[in-house]
Image 1 (tube, rainbow over the protein chains, first blue to last red):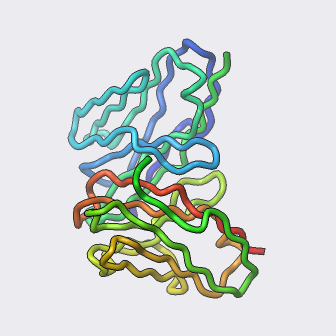
Image 2: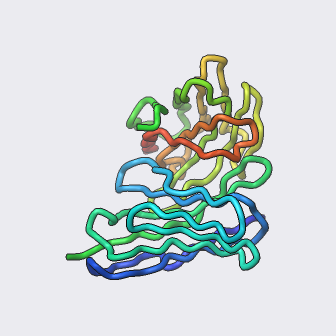
Image 3: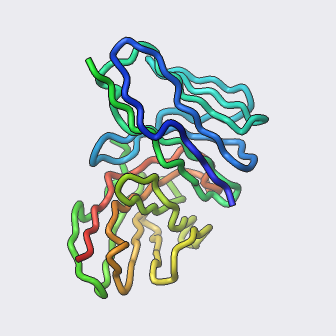
Length: 110
Length: 114
């Protein structure tokens, strides 16, 4: 059974600082997704990573994928308050089932 | 805005009752997936439909059932509600059959079972 583990689960950081969220998974998968969820809201797709070594960037967020290590990272550069949210990584199996991590709740303080 | 809508927004039921949640996918999206998200947890995959046929199921009992219609709408039905069914229910649509494309999530239905 595919397992997806994120760490840390909670992250409090100051504005302007950098940090990385880690997503480890237990079986091979060729598609990894990162989502953002604001409190009480639905999920917003951030990135789709399709192959080993893939790197995608949007604003202050950069995601990467290492399929050999079964690891994806979401790097936050110079955090701002608007980035406060819960971030999920998820993988699809060939059956189309998505397995999500438990999420990382990020709080950015002034 | 993803173009995926869900109704109702909130719902309160009592144990043992039955509930139907509805989702309207983006036009042209043949795949719809349903997820249950308990408070403080990641979404859990319930099942997926492709062109009106079930195309994968997670670890949920048979009292969770679904339907997909030709007009890109779908339903999640839950019978014999239990307290643990209280959660946010999300549907997500995607355009291809394997569910490997980006999923577009609806706003969710918050179900409370008393």
